Amino acid sequence: MYARDHALIATPIGPIRIEGDDWQLERITIGSEGTKTPGGTAAVRAAAEQIEQWFAGERRTFALSLAAASTPRGTTLRDGLIAIPFGQTISYGALSTLLGSSARAIGQLCARNPFPLVVPCHRVLNTGGRLGAYSAGQGPMTKSWLLDHERRLTGEYLL
Image (cartoon, rainbow, N blue to C red; front, side, top):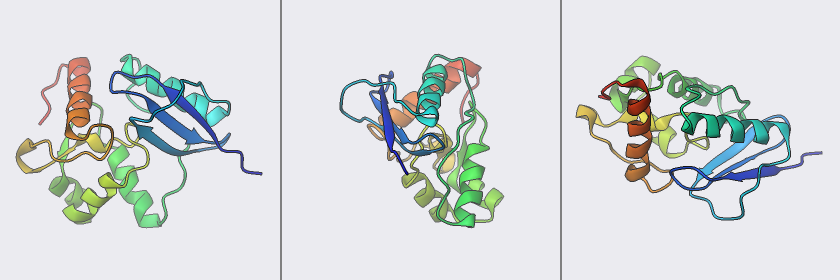
């Protein structure tokens, strides 16, 4: 039987809701409302802990089981996003070239990303290093905060 669980944690960018079960995460939502709760299942508790560590500067990558992408191509593109190193950025066009896709497909992937932070679409920028859109939290303001957070921790200038 599928028992859905959730955690709601406080972060510097607002509350984050983590949904899943004992085996995998189904969704992460930045800017959710509700009462803070740690979650009861293994995957949800692990995600809450790792996200809190990320905000504390104690973690740069995530080791979490995510619900499968809807297609094998979606998995490849998501893996490409995950591979962007902490503290670094890439343009939609450059990432599309690396992944053999189109910049538009990368934009759609980022806009529909059910796992912000864990699948770091905030690291994808417009041409020329312009911030561009962000579909989570408070949009570009949240994206800017996330990039600044990584820059503070790495000491690197993000392009």
